[in-house]
Length: 264
Image (cartoon, rainbow, N blue to C red; front, side):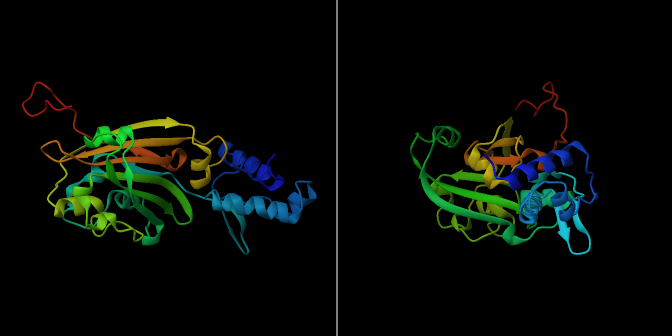
């Protein structure tokens, strides 16, 4: 059975999602909820702190607890991988999303761990390796402020990234331009990318890590990154808090009758 503060936080979160409390509305004062029988002062305070940690409200002296005015982050499609951003500039893909969303970014909002691991079946297939072959796994957790937005784990063949910034666990992107720029400097220029998306219920661990409210789903992303000769140089699995993103794709409509449009 969930503690009383968690039950109260979940009920208030549901009321926020249903629109009972709109963006900019102030939640009831703690003493009012105490008097209404919602629990002790510490119970209500803990519920409000949980809502704040989940990014639903902000609290400040003199203003109380207010529902955040925040649209979902825009996650760009093709445009987020524009070479002008990472090859000729210093912008990485998720920072490009922040820019178009009008949001800022601090280096400590991305943390990562880097390890050598045996390739699971999906990773091995994408990278053209036998299952269980050794790969580098670069696992990132990305936040907006204190709120997690998504995880992304990229897998690489060791010979492609050994000795590069990609295998450096220092918080933040792998230098100017991120991992794509590192691969480019190593002689592996990105040419095309395949992405697959699907929605699902999060695992208990994902719900804790991403601070998801009960009933929230995630979007799982599989990304395979290729050079012009078809070499797969990265396979990534991302888990995104579904309600914290909008997904935008802007692309030319293919015409397979025209030369050069044969590739799907």
